[in-house]
Image (cartoon, rainbow, N blue to C red; front, side, top):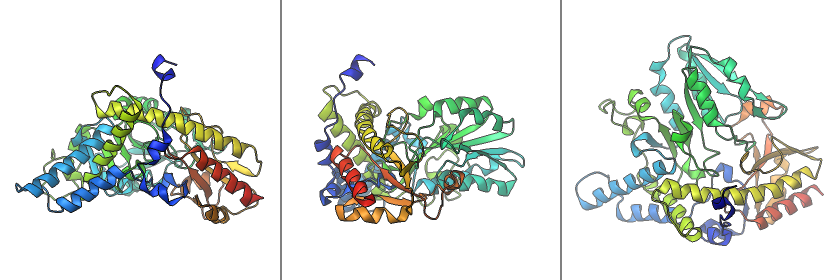
Length: 417
């Protein structure tokens, strides 16, 4: 542990929670992997845009010019968050929609017999569109989880690769198990084989900092509405790949006119402007906890994410210990809450009980959890789970408190008797 790590401050959870108006409703909210609450700064950015500049952006008159500038600020903020340039990110309605558009944009790169590798761990957003490349003759190979661990074995990837491998698609963090995959290591293996790598970072990005350059990924997708922002999806691509990709917008967009050529219909105006509110919030947290501010937003965000990781580990350890103490629970994936191995996303079943029966029992105590397959139906099948009933999932983020976790534990204890 470095001296800086030893002296890292503890997250001021009361300060954090004061930024989220939705937390005033009294619910202990554990459906964060489905979509997070937003801080007041995001709400204010969207409100300001719609109040002052709800016009077509990009003209010379003042409100239109201001609208374009606010959208530019939003796109720049979300790009800097992941250490990308603004023209390397495409803002779209969702990660699912962005992946679908990209899969069509790179179809011309595939010839019959070329190969794409997908997993049965991933959310369907990083599955279905890629598997449809079989329609043009691509060979789809599946990197399968170990049913005993619910994890991907890194050693199982290399045998799937060949000189015909064009693309490998994998998640950074499972939205069911919360387990991290070593993306930098996977990128080295894939690139050595001559392939490209697409990473789904939706479940990772609310919890840990993303640096697309350090990871050396070719494409990376995530959803700001799970990173304390508006309901949008963001797609990163290395610039050369985005230029080479076939446009999915109107025919008159040039090949180098990125990101617009890959954003059919153009992104939502006010929500794109609202992305800058995420940066406002992170900077407010940084100013609260650190006396020195690095020059770049990405560096400041990395500092803040380290505070998140420390706090989330304490929450995860607390809840993991409870699950381990009762043999009726089957936790899917790793035990424990180590911050370097997992996010605080816990999916479990209860012996002798349908998953659908449990969440309603906690509602009287205003504890919000949910059951289902969470669009990871292939993983449900691989683990021998009923996709129709799925698992119970309790997912935490940095604004959850120890008191929230205690309410969740108490609610589960009372529900199970």
